[in-house]
Amino acid sequence: MVASRDSAVGEQSPDGGKKVAKGAKGVAGVKSESHTALVRRARRINRELAEIYPYAHPELDFENPFQLVVATVLSAQTTDLRVNQTTPALFAKYPTPEDLAVADPEAVEEILRPTGFFRAKTKSVIGLSKALVADFGGEVPGRLEDLVKLPGVGRKTAFVVLGNAFGRPGITVDTHFQRLVRRWKWTEATEPDKIEAAVGALFPKSDWTMLSHHVIFHGRRICHARKPACGACPIAPLCPAYGEGETDPEKAKKLLKYEKGGYPGQRLNPPQAYLDAGGKPAPPLGSA
Image (cartoon, one colour):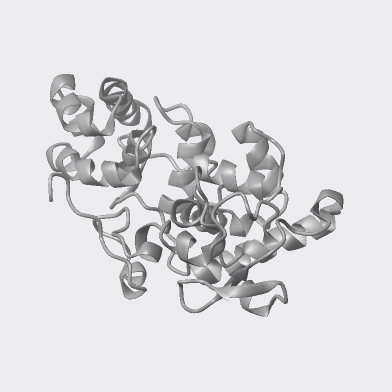
């Protein structure tokens, strides 16, 4: 782990005894960083994140491409946890595109109500199911140009499906990804397609899917939007934004979420590797 090798570190983090940065804010010289240096730093961050989150995975529960595309559409403006708590009832009643395509919208709305914007989401998932049946024989297509034609499916959703259901590399530019790559000065872009292009140019295409998981995991667990836990961050020595959040190790430790803070994760049925690492499955909808 980088923090245990860097001479700038001092305090122990609450996770595995690894050390984190203490002292001056930011990475020296990052403003004048060459492209080559940026590529090296970016790839080093990804390597460190791969060590921190060796079990990183998509945090939406799914058993097939249809479930994943529906769940990803439903994840807009809500948490993956809420989606995972909601989709078991949806897929139990409508297990295939053919079933959902002919569903009563009011019945679907009632199931999707906990996810927010349930009327628009109902329209999207019924619409994409109809399109799958009419245009793709009831099968989710494995090409970007086909996926983005489906109602409610943009590039972000398409890359989630391609990377995790079909094993085809893609960068998922969600809110966590956008926040972190800008904090790390990988890009100054604000538009998702420009962020995707800029970050994609820093990494081999084969890294894109797992890079997305690493960054999103870190954004949810440590590098939060409102108050990042800088004092508990193992990649602090590589971060130009170090100091924007809480730097005191003990105070930062209290900000950690999910398995880093001892809380259940996002999935009801997480991968075994996540459970083996101490992660806990989420509670079902309606549980105490």
